[in-house]
Length: 116
Image (cartoon, rainbow, N blue to C red; front, side):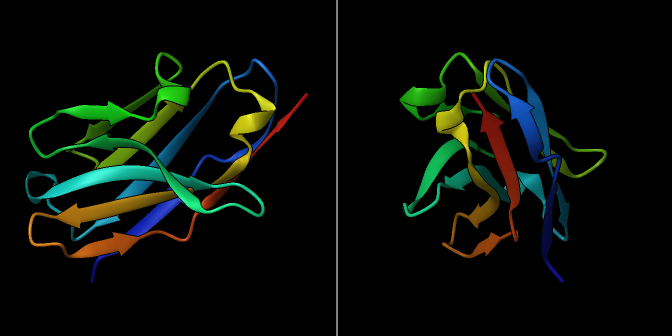
C-alpha cells in the first residue's frame, strides 16, 4: 500500500532552517516524480519543488536558492531542505508522488511555522 509520511515541520525563527522528510512506502522513485507542495492559511495548495525520476529538479521562483529537494533511494525518502526561512513560508507542506500515467498520491502534511 502506497504511503507518504511527512515529518520535520515545526516552529522556526525567520532566517532559520528546517529539513522536511517524506518517507515513501511502495513507491519506486524510478517511476515517479516526487514533489513538495504547500498550503498557507486561506490559500490554495501550490507547488514548491519537484524531483523527477531522472533527477531533474524544478522550484517555484520564491524558493529558488533557498530550498533544495533531494532523495535517498536507500531510505526511500525525499527531503526538502529549507534555508533562510521567512514568515511567508509558513504553511502546511505536503509530499506528492505522481507517476507518468497520472496516478497521484499525497501525504497528510507537516506544518511549518516561521516567526518574525
